[in-house]
Length: 490
Image (tube, rainbow, N blue to C red; front, side, top):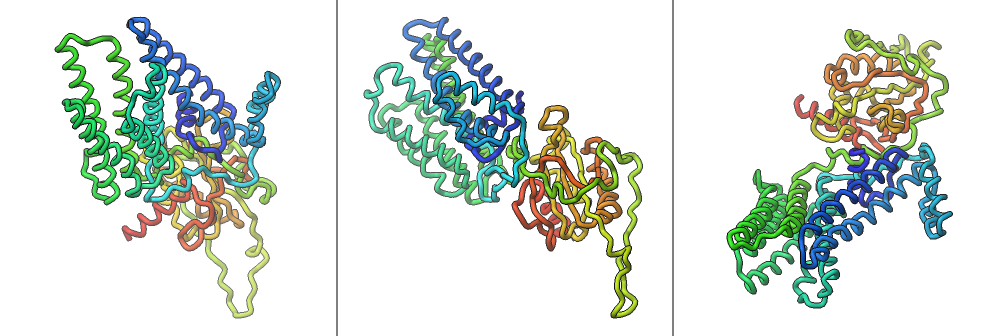
């Protein structure tokens, strides 16, 4: 359930991917529990306080509901697509009672393999993009901003604030949009710079230690963006904005306690400060992360079976066949045909080839202990074991196994499809089984050679000249990163 809820939030603006039945309903359950716990805590605080305390705690509950609208819509669309239904089925909710029942039935339909890969926007990440921590940063900023607006609405004095306050709210919304777009460039500096200028104005109007530290926090946000854009981020600077925000609250709390003005409402104020501090922390992390090594898309994305029915009957090991992992087979080179005369023709036995698919299975839990996403690491480990020349012309696919999507295991699969299954059996499979790292992170059975694969995998592309041409994906990036590393060390 925790994994499903994580995917719910990390897929905040992902309307192109897919979500399984279990992933959807676990996310719904987790969101209901979270809303209940949040309402209970804030309601408890409201009951312990006096003097219109509901006007203080209610904005956080309402703003949380507003923040949940977009990811809830996105996960419904992903679930409908995963079940083979059009996104337009969401309009069934406009039909009272019966429409909701029809929509629930469609949301419970089992997964249907798509006819083409549909990678999420995460799979398209480039080196100059923000890391995936930008998503929680944007969500927390959005929640805090909505809470500030709803607080004024509940108090009935929304028209009492001046233009600088509204400019600050617009700056936060602009920063949220920039974070969702996910590009790391100097344009990201504009909203924090505007907020910094507004903080200077507020400090001049009302000088206080808290306002000064608040100004310093936004100045450090601007510095973090500038340094990361210039590729010269000092170590530890990422944590400075969040640290300053929490320091400002602690100083304010200390003065209140010293003056005897402390109340239970300071806990509510702490929630607001915590939202700001966490958003600054995730923002800083997103600036220094490599988005190509993040894991979000791999948790809920999968596409078409690679080279499915084209290979006919099973070849080699049957499903469930377990390769011996303790004693990996010796590498057996396959000699190529060398004609003895210019007009010599290959023998009939040499011309006969039978296509095949080599499936390599990894434990997701074990790969998650490594650095980067498990999709990237699965390709990286295979790339370290198998040189690109051996994979020339072969199709690479990856994704979660069908059993994983059904909730009975936690395994990802890399598929290597070739028109010559003998090469897979005699050359590539032995190298994979001989790799200690692959064996340590593999799942049982570690490898299988089949005629066709029914696993719901994403086609990454075809290996040509040491690169993978095609749609791309985390596994493809991992393979090419391993090959590049080997090339640099040579």
